Length: 227
Image 1: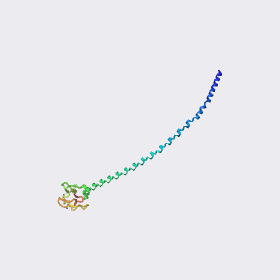
Image 2: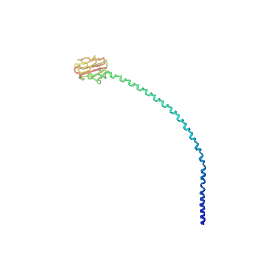
Image 3: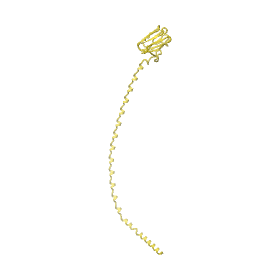
Image 4: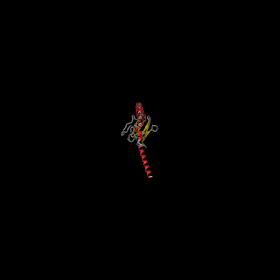
């Protein structure tokens, strides 16, 4: 039995060696078959390389339609249209400036009432307006004392003023008192009066007509303003 085992092992080893000696045959077959190597169809086909259609077609490059169209650049309509700038209607219209109606209206300034010269202490605020009343009388002496009431009176041209009081004690004189300054209108219708108790004078012309008491000036003095 041992002999059979040895014999069988020997045969197995021989078979294995025989199989190894048959392997080199396929290697020679691959060396002579050059079908794949000589077929250079893909290498010689340079269709893609020589077709430079995309390269030579410079249609987009030479078409400068957008670049040469300078319509937007040369159209300076908004810049040259200076309508708003040259329209100086508001500036040249100096209606309010040249309209000096209020400035040239010097009614109050030329009105002699506002520019009165102060005579015998009579200021604008002191004048009593008797132009529209029937009482145009200046009283003095008695309860009034050494004074005229009213001292400063306004009347209209053509109106009459009466002086009532004891002229013997308070002699009436025309014009500005010697101790006072200023001038009155001439001729003054007020006449010097040394007697009696009442006298009247008519003032025909506008102006300032001062008077005074010869004994008690300058405190006893007055003015008739005729407008």
